[in-house]
Length: 179
Image (cartoon, rainbow, N blue to C red; front, side):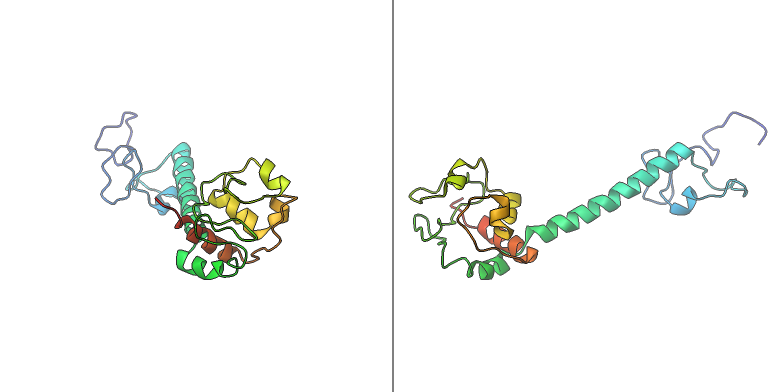
């Protein structure tokens, strides 16, 4: 290959049509062995990616792994509403799930997405009244696993120590709304 010019039939051109999916946005097959070619070996029959291309593909692979781990974590964090209904039984002595029926604690119907300290007819602690918190899944999980750590001055003393129980409870609470 004495010529410096490459034509579209040269196998080393990055934009060649890849016969084996998946491919990168340049059409290069995403095959790990192609990324790890030894430059000392003759690889005239294979595509030889540049260092920048290798970095881009490895970054993409890393991102894919991270996204898969995040998705698995999010799915795990999403919890099981049926299991959460069973966990709620521990809360039922102090909290109702019927709108307007407060007990030692406020009712939990429609709590997800609600501002803290906003259930009508319930007398909250000063800390809860002054809290600028929206009960999203993250805040609810943090609160039910460590109420006093999450909101010093709260009157709630019971905590769920098992993170799976907390995720399940929050998944159940998400189902309690008029929408």
